[in-house]
Length: 233
Image (cartoon, rainbow, N blue to C red):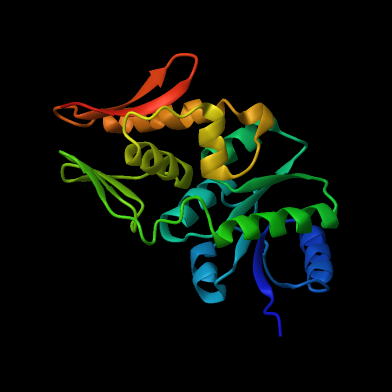
């Protein structure tokens, strides 16, 4: 017997969530609906979903705030639901570590295909650090099992994508990666017009690494090629 995958849908459009629940239960999914952003963390702990569909525009709580809160506590793939093809919302969601986005209105078949793709990726994700060791360069410690960057005694908050990038680069000091390679490795998908979002992630990481005193490692730009992690002697 095949176990049904659990999906948590967070959207205030009750008509839409009713349609999703009706059709998804005909496939291999078990659906939980939340029509507001309250107590989402508690609901996740209770239902243990395999994937979350999260609307950007909620009346009581911003979808991006919920995304950030979920990532602090849970390692669950998240697909953002955005309206009107708003490119800004898509870019923000991807930069914050969302696994995919779907623009409203969408077809149920497209949404199911996106969910299946994300679930396949998440079985053996690029960011699977369960058997990885800590990386340390003087005052800088990268801790994979907690997905944490620690500089001295200070622990810094990273998004899922930021940590994936940092661990990859720090694991391969002085090796240059192109933007395309980094996007492929950390996301396993083609972002097309969003390929420059990698620059934003790198910028955020550089700002956090500046807390070193003295600086022993940094992410350097290799002009015309990409980025590499350099460690001083």
